[in-house]
Image (tube, rainbow, N blue to C red; front, side, top):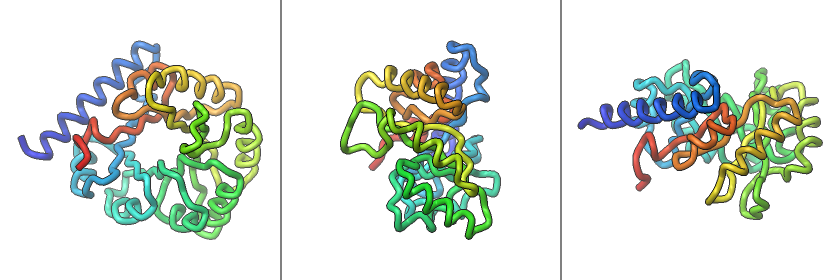
Length: 220
């Protein structure tokens, strides 16, 4: 099997599993966006995933996004899904279509200024830290409403929803918690779920799932 055939087969399998999970929760498969996570994989793999129908791609690091996103076909969207250092806000705005990891007002303001200077309106998600893991980025759930309100007031940012990376283990309860928080805050988009738990995330309301190894295979 060629690499192109392998990735196409994996993409089809992930899309089938997303569709089945969406059906179980009474939703349409097209209500869930598959974001293929390219972390550590070569640009050639991302291009093969595009050929297989993927249109959204995620990178954890700004530098890796800079190396890949500009070379993706024009109908692709680049999502930054890792923590962004405040001094890299300008670079993030230049390369990304969506920043999923806004976790502070300081970062939001820096992104807003950079987007305004670039003449663009940047789609963003607020990252929420569920499970109290101090090693994870994100705003605490009880502080999310204030940050959401502040981000909505920034003219060059288009706040779409919430994102989380829950602690390992039983992630479903955290997905349900993010859904409830999104409902409370009136935010529709929910980015949650990765290769090992995206079906549970879809069942709990995910509108974006971030899938890497299930598409590209084990990381080196």
